Image (tube, rainbow, N blue to C red; front, side, top):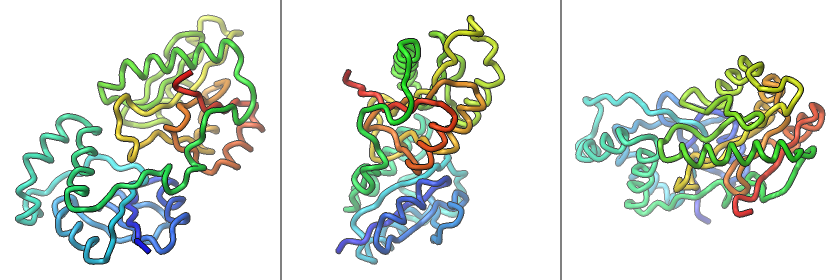
Length: 269
């Protein structure tokens, strides 16, 4: 049976994926190690020797799981083979996170390692369309639609994968600091809603248009619910089939306790 390597980043996703696999080989980019998960580290400057090591172990499949930021590269740490790829890697990094990730995936595939998606390994973590908790109102649905339009428009700019919309107005966009920072910003500016007694607003998350969905999907979990509650929102929605739901049972429990709706939206509807 093929052994799968998990390239683990920060957050709860990598441990969840590792638990779903039998005897995975877990690695983390130096400086981005996941908490509570045994792993070995590697450096991007020695990417090809790392890939060689995976192949020598009989590994043919790799899954990327968790948050990773652009590492600082040490020119003196490159091995000769990986050094030949420096122009390619730097050009991709200058083009944005999506291009950088796509280039890394290409290099793995060029060396006969196939990339698995979270949906392949843990299909229950990527919900299909439907309301999982609560009931979005007609106004909430319009706010979700507006948020989806905003993300569709900003996606090509490689900014982020989330937006907060209330009463048709965008209160916050996800940027490099992430979802928690976005929701904290929305909480600070909740009084900017035109009608204080009107719709509270929604968080909507979706992959960027054209994104490779084998890596870096938006993620929602119990902490997201807590953050949305503090921001005073009515609910959380996301693109069905394109967003990871961590710890489904606990996420639903917290949403139901707080009166938040959770809605996986059919992007084709």
